[in-house]
Image 1 (tube, rainbow, N blue to C red):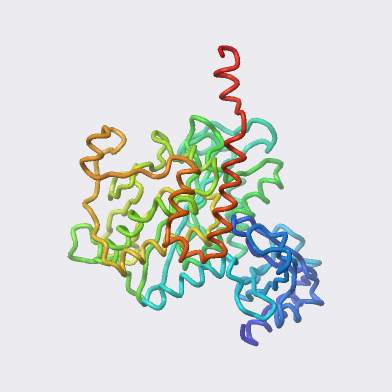
Image 2: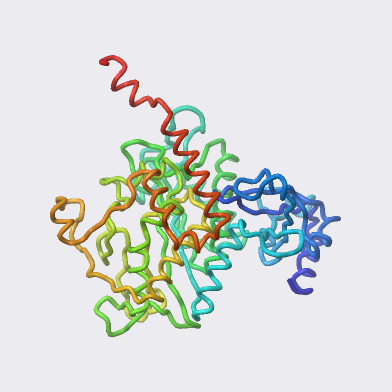
Length: 444
């Protein structure tokens, strides 16, 4: 942090009468954590950080080593638009979590992403991402979910009665300095999407955390409930987080190759091959809940089979068609992640898998442009098409034996994440569901 950065924050706090500054960070599951300080504490916080008890934060530390320090990142200073403005205002800053001696805390998701971005930087790359986070509006969070509308893809009024909610959400995000590209009604009833403008992965992870909160805050303000749950409605499309990604060397897109039939460089092809080879191992990170696997089933536009293509949107990885003069827009789109993941860890494992492909020179198979869902098992096996884990337990087993994920997350987070997911699976496995009661109680 430079003196200039610190002075800018102090100046903004004074000019806008900011009385409270919320310090934000995430636990390993991607839940936003926060505590507030008054402006009288701000200078100390900027110089020394603010101490807190890390033993109560999921995946952080044991009670006998609980002292943690939150170091504000002045680049993320922002006044919260939904709080009072210009009088007793409230601002926020994302924090890096460190030990009392100032060394980075190995369980901080933001640090984990930074560490993996450094690996890319050491190879000369900057990692850019553009996620499409889908969500639902429901009348309440209680009981069975009730949609606000029964509109479909790109529907406008009167079916899309949430247009004003999306509009206010977009305006709020842009007021916070988060650029938005698109917003529209999605395929399922009461399902929506707001696409954030492509940027570097660390900024985007911060933006994604902010986005999820803003969507919920605006919904709450209007008396409805917004959820990023992967599959809240049975028989309807679930919420995805299709993630567009590319690597740049300076101003040049490292994925683009003019003479290639797919306009993909060797680097781009190896990156895709790395994702395809390692995606079973990273699925637990990008689809981390029991409910995530209710979305990853055939028939609802979510990928199941590990394939890539240019035009086919049923594939795991899509390479959007090249437009002449748009070399910088060359990218790949991974379609399996859902928006309930931890974006810091999700971007870290995606990048790590892609870099593995580049460093080890993985070869990319030909694309599969036909509909994989219409093939039988014999046809898929003949093409060597593999499948994603079918449930959380399969995903846990794949990740548990993955050296790539262990290296990407670090031993501390890897161990704690696996342990947390095993507990979730055991709790889920022991439940007696409504499906079982409906199907079996009256006949067995």
